[in-house]
Length: 241
Length: 221
Ligand SMILES: Nc1ncnc2c1ncn2[C@@H]1O[C@H](COP(=O)(O)OP(=O)(O)O)[C@@H](O)[C@H]1O
Ligand SMILES: [Mg+2]
Image (tube, each protein chain N blue to C red):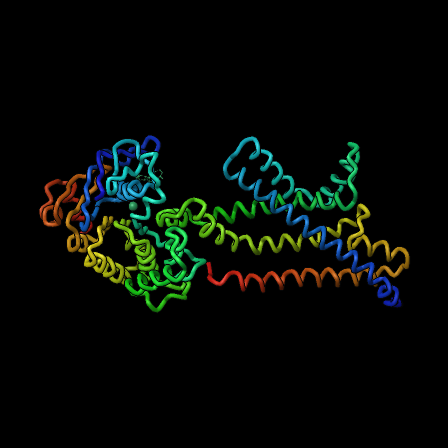
């Protein structure tokens, strides 16, 4: 379970998260929607300890993420993350991209790592690309590679930060389909997304972020179909039009 | 023009010319190796603003890149000599080349490092890699690709610039050529052969470097 209690985060004088409370149970999918600059990415970075927090507490399976005693490198093995800008490792083949971390972080044998790599790549539909270099692939393929790379670490949770936002429209579908497969697999996920229809389809809960706070949260039916707050209504009418 | 070419004298002195060429290679390789070590230091203190070393680094980089190599060799040989520090011609030229190589390579390293997107680092950290693993497996290999060709060029530059050793009586290829021609007065022949030897050496370096890079760097960036 990921538990977020009253988290505050500032960059200098700018308070970006102003007391966030969230809970994601095993097997759940939470989507986070909201305008740009509302703090969605920052929250994901705080969850996997790429960013520090100023106040509050985040626990992942009861491990305090920002406690000094926590081994954050080890903690990140539980948390797969895929970013908006695809960042495949361009000097490694597709298979090496996926097999590297299992080998050097989890100390698997080369054969084991390759086996996992091939399995995860096949899972995201890149079974014919093992020896290709990622720069030769489309953005959609590179995002699927990034998903496979994260999955190869066998994480308990996946964090997705607007992974379709930088893609050409015709490539969005293949990446969303991959997320649907993960949903079927029962993966616990937090998806920051602008794909409202997708969020509504796959999410157990949806949180609407506005200027560093959660304006509204609940089931897709509540938040998308019957938003109570005016800010939510405005945001939805803008992105749905 | 009725200049008569006499190549025999040159060919007789070939062993001495080759010895000179060996010294040329020797001094340029050494100046690269030591230059690289210093450049790594200069680049790191500059990028991390580690005072007071970052000031030294900035001054070093400025002077080495914006003054003629000739001036630097004179400073090392005659300049230091005026203060009672007498370097041999070899050490004076070596020091000057190290000075310039370190300055140029420091900027090459800094630029190469900064050209790697920060997201590569976040991506590797998010996979559970330690800082060391992120640098070793992800950042440095990509950086090495970007600095490889500038480094090769710097090496070729060192080979060619070491010919300024002629000015302080160093017996590298040019110095040797100068000495041999003054004994025989076959000036044109000696310098033509020396030019061909420089050409062969630098071509050899460039072609080997490109063959090695093809083996080393398979993916594209
Ligand atoms: N590293 C940073 N340094 C300073 N300000 C930042 C940094 N990262 C994000 N911000 C600021 O924090 C705010 C929230 O950013 P972000 O979490 O990326 O929003 P979102 O993902 O919802 O678009 C923005 O105003 C952004 O400019
Ligand atoms: Mg964002």
